[in-house]
Image (tube, rainbow, N blue to C red; front, top):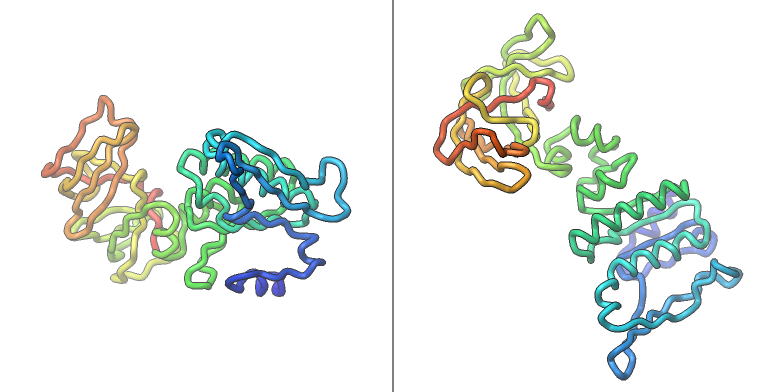
Length: 289
């Protein structure tokens, strides 16, 4: 694995020994070469021969033609489907994906990542998927490795990474997060911690021992908080925007900006810019760093 990582880490052209290539399937951004026919109405899709000893349905050495209009409509998704087929046809021990969906539009990305996940599970093959898209990482992974400047920041399941990040970097990288600074005041009889945040006290569920008077960072996801009239922390609304399936709020808790997403706002009270209210959340929905 060390030898393989060193080869893949080089920039520019990558030369891979045959014995490794036979066990690894690859899928990149640039997966096919295309040429336009002289009349401009058809496009030839050239697919390389995968291996010399392939036969029957495992041989992909052929050319197909389609109208230019059809080609343009299905180009990006078909590229990735063909690339995945080419990677699987050699029956590799592991599949490597290098941001294969970065050139697709938003809807195609969702459909293609679903298809990749389905095929990977049906085939039962180990896959390593490199991406900067957090939604792809969450949708495709059993385990996520978060890298920060070439160093592993955290390894865990999507749920562990999202709900229990080990740093502000990880919390901000996967999903959207609010960071509230608070000092530990005391513990309650039920094992919760009372934190002083911007002059107000709030209970949270700590994940370990806290030191009295020490300042901690509280991670609060936008969907884990709501606006109300009682409890929580005092705040002032600075943005209220209807987004269809949710109401998007920005509120100020003291000098700290907090972002919220209130789902299905129909028949709910909608707070307007300038309103004062309370930021409320379940103590279990806060992660203490």
